Length: 321
Image (cartoon, rainbow, N blue to C red; front, side, top):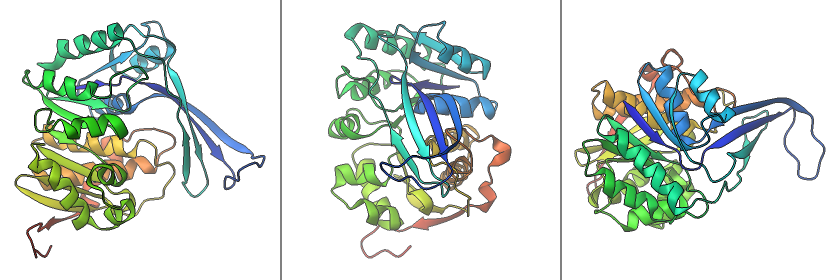
């Protein structure tokens, strides 16, 4: 079972434009798509599509249309008392696949609302193969709340995956190895934020990205899946490092591609795949996702791990991949 926590869920509203976005101009909209979203929610959706049991823990009223949409999609939802309405995040997509995101902050969390989310999560943790802590924290949440949750979850039998950014990510990194998850999924920008590297170089250079990811493994993280946009992803564990190149894809929307990559990796683990197989499936899922509108997650029939090329990386001084 895949258990997800989305503490700051969102209605993801995607607006497709017929022409490139020009600041200050009037544009013609070709389509609008609303989807119940958030990183953890996206992973639970992907689990349902792959036939895996999942529980999504999130703050929302039981009768909220957001919850009903997920239930209709087959997601088992554990709603906890919210402090306000589910936020709306806006994505503007241009014809070439370029996306512009406008994210709202969400309702202000309280100590009571955070405690309810933690209790709901721990209620199911021992039954889960993976617990995924995903997305931004709502206003009012302590920046180190994810680090505290990792510590609490390490007292259970589950595996812990973390996908977040900015302050919450920095707080977890600062708390290593005490708050080390089994898996972290940063992108190049997030890797650069705590290694001091250059985002463009890390995204373009798999060896540099893997070397940056290895600093987390050295501090106790079990595995690091670092997504590199069109350059695929790298996986670093204590046993080795690998790069997977993404197959050619017609880009429709990049929103949610990282969530799909993370799920693909988790699915590979549930299936008992090797590290290179888990990486290949992760990249296959991410590549499939960018070819779909909005934050739509792919199903297994839309993914093609056989088209993903994986090579080992040598991170030793003077090593050659």
